[in-house]
Image (cartoon, rainbow, N blue to C red; front, side):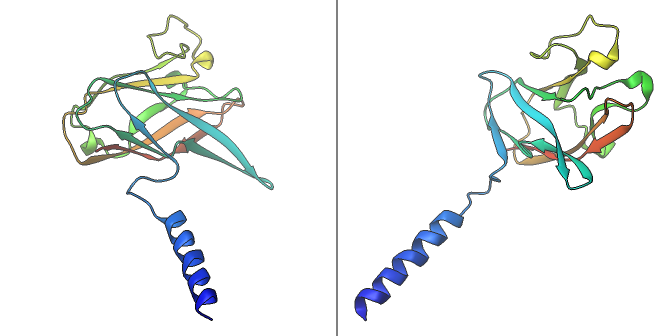
Length: 162
């Protein structure tokens, strides 16, 4: 009986350890100044329903690291095009824009460099540079873009200054 109780306790402890979190979602990315931080907008199909999700869902900016480049990437012929309407990676609420992010732009360049491509249907990437000087702050944003058929789409994840 003692052996069964002991083995049950080990099984429960193992399960709990596997479920613990440390404040960062399983679908998150810790970003520093060692290269671009990348997020991909995935097109996911659930039966007949198509959704878009940002992967990773959460972007965490490592405290003490500055000038972090974040690049969002679209696939499947989707694109950023302000000429067709509101498009890009934008703050969900204008009041969240406290000057912590600059160089916000669509581009055809996977490294986030400014584009020279006039055809916005080739703008598959969107770039932000995070100053990351205000700790413990979260930023609500939305990704507005067009699918390959020109239909407006949106997703709204978060960026966290740790």
